[in-house]
Length: 163
Image (cartoon, rainbow, N blue to C red; front, side):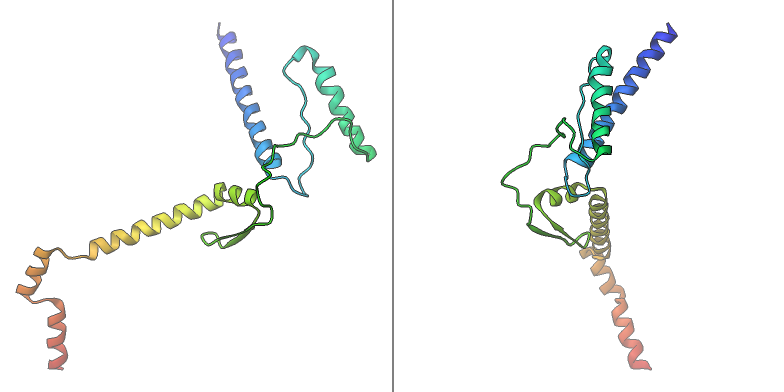
């Protein structure tokens, strides 16, 4: 019984890890294609009984093609791209002090960890500034108290004249 539970837990963790890897490959290589991004090839891995013919042989053929210096027979995976997107648009991120060229790159930058971190820092600074201003403001009751006792400003003026 414990063995079955362990096997099921291992399968679940493995599936989660595979999804995480797929998401990483998609975000890293397919979402932002560029000159430094290698081609990514998809292989049919759903049927384990056909692993050699559907995974191993095509993968070895792709590797052999690269080693020999010619294009493999299989086509690399492509992400559908938006034709209306401007690849040469100019965006300035004042928060990160960076210039971003291209709509896709701009969208990726705005979702990036570094940008979100800078945004969080800015919001914290802004909320701290508002809290400081609010703590420095004087209520009408406190204002009356200071006038009756003599405000610190009045004492300063008296000191200046006495010197």
